[in-house]
Structures are given as structure tokens and as C-alpha cells.
Length: 126
Image (cartoon, rainbow, N blue to C red):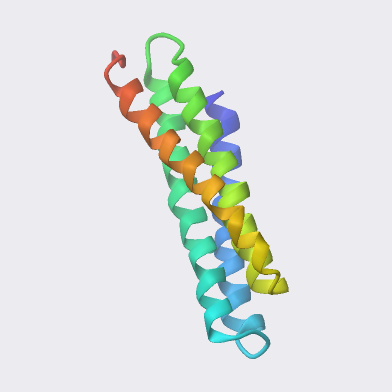
């Protein structure tokens, strides 16, 4: 599972950099300043959680026994990126306001992921 999470984190991190560059260069003159801020928030949170996913992968690889809570944490971060960042990208590019109602579901996935990480930390043995 650690290898899968590292691979996914690398792809998501790279896509976050690409999204930031796309916003700075291609979108700057095409969408409003507010839409650029929304897009940037999606890219930032994607990068934060791609890095967090790398940490989860490292912890999984170092643990002496399988860690189902860490695996759940990794999937929650991936789901959070897809929903949170994805909905912000779509909102900023389309202007469809109801997409903003989906974003908090991704935020909940992030929060639950951080909670499961905290819970998993108590069971880690190195």
C-alpha cells in the first residue's frame, strides 16, 4: 500500500504544480480574480494533502504490522483531494455556484483523515 500511496501522491503533487502554473499563466486573463483565488485554494490544498499522503506512505512502510487506520487515512486524503480540490477547480472554471456545496464534503474527508491519522499514531510501533 505504501508504494501505491507514494505513486498517487507523486501524481497529485505534480498535478498541483501544473494546476498552479495553469492558473498563473493560462487563466489569469480569462477568469475573475475571485475565481483565480478559488482555483488557487484547490491547488494549495491538493499539494498539502499530497504531501500528507507521502507521510502516510512513509508511516505505513515503517510500521512493524499492518495499519488499517493509516490505510484509511490515505484513502480519505485522496477522496478529499478529488472532492474538495476537484469541486473548486470546476467551480472556478464554470461559475456553476452549486459546485461550492460539494466542497465541504471534501473538507470533511480531510478532517476525518487527519483524525484517523491522530488515532493511528497511538498504535504505531517502530
